[in-house]
View 1 (cartoon, rainbow, N blue to C red):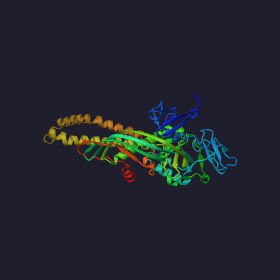
View 2: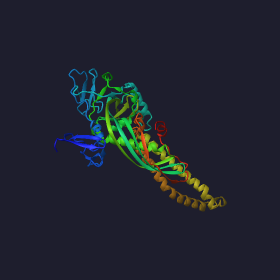
View 3: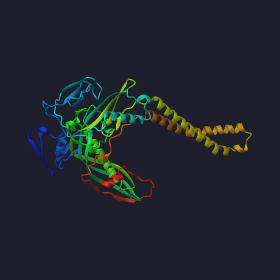
View 4: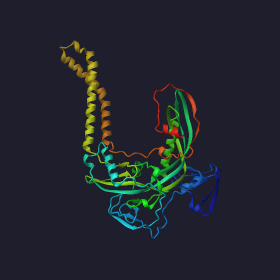
Length: 456
């Protein structure tokens, strides 16, 4: 391949590409080729299509902070020899352990690269506030051991500004399905275009993505331009993953929001909706580099170490709480006992209301042996009929309780937190009336129905 510049024309204008910096697919990082018939860039590896004008914004999702630091920079950084984490702080804040892995093998050194985030959300919760929120959260857990809530177990607590990429994108979704309004049935076919704004993705390989998604959302009303004055007393972790390197993750979440929008915009127009399929497409990505406040808590319990996170702005606490086998065992035993009582009650009612009147128990008081035998036989028959399904249900409940997590992590917030309401939301409808159906008393509702009525 030569290093000559080739010019690709499209309906949207002229797009120039240097062979030395050939365009890469945002999804799989393979080389893109221009399809003149479609006027789009085509990836042979994954089959995705991209508009030429959108490629520049994707390509800009690259590295930051790469310039050399000034010699007179008063900030310092600590490097963990165990997990590789790098945090930045002011010259008066010392670190004796790694906030992420707990290792004491942490080394202080001069700031090696520029540190230039775009935005920051300052810490709102103090260390004591974070401890209080953590203990309140643990107390709400039904399986947490009684002796788990103890200040002595809380060995380390550190305030860290976690790096995030805030992603803006244009989204388009096409959804298909069926809808019902009263007794009228419709075929749904519509295309919705909208913008997402400041969708956060943590930019640290050493921090769990699920953990950071679980403490969302942050209140963007309190986001401000980055200033070193917010740093004293806290640590700021450097990003070690660029937005371009996490393209799959970004594309997946943005596309899921596109599908959500297709469903929610449609749902509030009908009494009942069934979206059978939805195709989504997002492009024109842009990024912002931000630091968000998180308290990391290291907790020791029965020789094991646990890590928890508390949102330093909202107080949302997340993490993996150990469970008490006694509490879980009691719950299982209680469920089994209750279902045994239910079975006995059903059999007793069955015998008393159906079997005894049929065999004339009240007219044969002297023939108790015969009556008793018939009762036992009928109970056995009835029990064999209901025992299978009920036993299966009991085993299902036991298994569910046994594997029930102590504190399931919340998934990422839904789309209403990140839709750009300052931009236009457009929709092209191709819905068609298909016929009349019997009226169904059940109606379908959506969490975003009221929100969409206000903003759409």
